[in-house]
Length: 99
Image 1 (cartoon, rainbow, N blue to C red):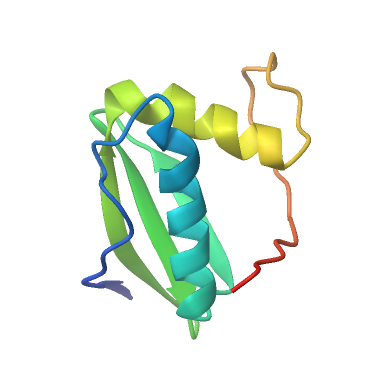
Image 2: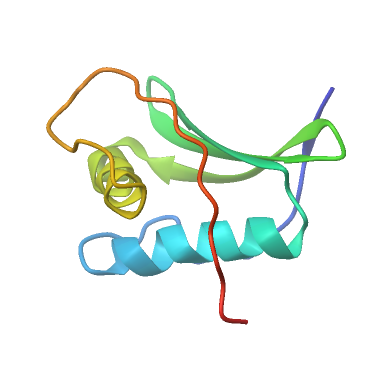
């Protein structure tokens, strides 16, 4: 079952140097909501962000397609993944927040 969460996780239209703040905000918000997973899903016209909370997926944001490569690049950077690779790379990360 899918739900929709109303959430303020930063400006979905953020770009450039704001990409770091946007991605950090998405992760921080997911942690605050006790999400077990954060899904970054590239779709045809947008990048959809969903949290898995208590086994249910909640859509929390949509980011314009033109920001997708910046967001994915930031995720790869903080995950120590190869940024040159274009194929799918699954990774589970532990994120330490200084709240």
